[in-house]
Length: 211
Image (cartoon, rainbow, N blue to C red; front, side, top):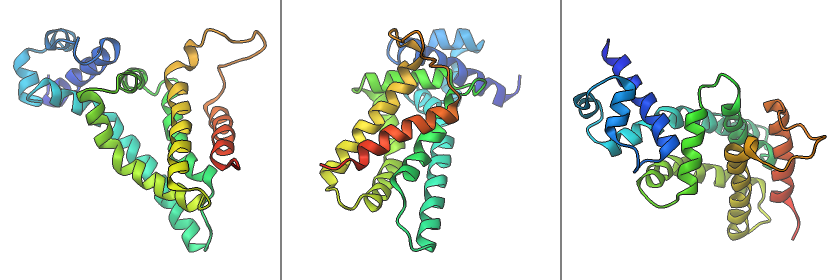
């Protein structure tokens, strides 16, 4: 088995157990058993359990953030060339659309989505620290773009509206299919494109609502 295959097996196994059981309850032995490697392989590739967790998060979050940031910068460049102000809805779209695309069948992101949901639900500890360190540059840039879109709001008001909007997004990612109270005539299995538009209608209205 080649070196990259060994490393990827460890990452996949760790992602699964961290998502299912949490970081602290997961033992390296359970990861190595699932990955069919010995403990020395984990130490060789990652050095420690904490470094393994960071590698698990980085593997999917960094490419996702590159897509989000790339779309945001393209939008800002386009509107600047046109002498226009970026629309709040389109700024939000650069973050929301790539995120909700993780829900696509076959995206191989189920464990990652569950892991991030667990991290957000347990805000204290090493996992949250790692996650926020990787999210901070993107979130700061997004906040700057939204401030351009909504100059009438104070930074205090803008912060809380962003906080509420992304709390809703987090809920969709973590709880959507497990929601137990669904009217008989409501179908929650909607295409991702439709879900993006439904969410943006809701979030944009909240971001832009007059006081």
